[in-house]
Image (cartoon, rainbow over all chains, first blue to last red; front, top):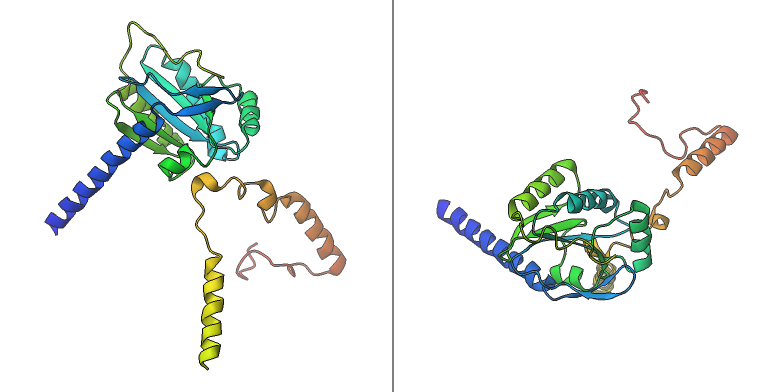
Length: 175
Length: 71
């Protein structure tokens, strides 16, 4: 029984590891659009912590989560962390309207429901992946309840080292 | 008898074919307020109250509770 549990644990760990690589591989060099429709590529991520959030205008918990992520993006100025909040709305205009209403300065992108979301087969919405500097996903948060957000914040802080030379490379990103 | 059973099986197969799992990222259309049964809950409650007053049929359209008279 114990041997079986250990084997099951190993399989789960391997599955988690595989998932981690899938996220980094999927986003590295991936072409997205800003909410204004300009094409951008997620590159220069090597050695940096990346917080990838998937959201939609029609998703209530996402609307609660976005302002929190926006505040963190400003709070974590001194850390080498890149935020990418990717809308999976079919219509980018809906996402842009929500972004305007919430007055977000977070780097926001649009990708729709059929590409990255389908590739990663997102198990929930909102979902946020924290990809560490080594390219492994160190934390995944599902939902936006306070406990989840606290754990997500702690994971970002722990994954993102302080950057002395480049205070916040993500500042001023597209929107 | 066999034909009846085959027809039944075919019917079940057709009905089951209509079932689909919707992924969380594909729920945009389902999340549209127009898909809600009670998209205008306040208006529905007002209308129900008006019907009940007119018909003298309180509870006729379904009511909460299990008959304990505590609601």
